[in-house]
Image (tube, rainbow, N blue to C red; front, side):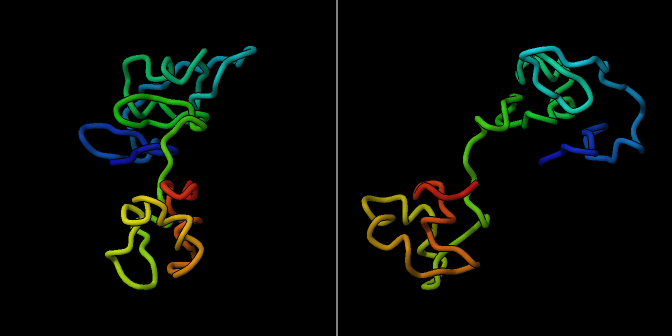
Length: 127
């Protein structure tokens, strides 16, 4: 599950911060070479959670695979999620990721507003 932004993970559920028991992150002013963790700052995204998990990983950072990482270093995601081409679900981003399919077919068969070369990380697209 994703629980970020104005929400936090509390008692095994994602809730809006205004509905949470107050356990505020320490607010500090940024100095050179610090990242915004969303409400506080640290020397790196890895230092944002301070043992508090995903709810303290925001701002310049995202929670990915159990770690707080720089948003710029986060893994690519196919976009739109679940994309497949106009010939049907068999021809999805995994299919295009094989061999030279991106270069051979990636600019054709637009679906969901995108071609494979725009939608699929395996073809250089995605977000």
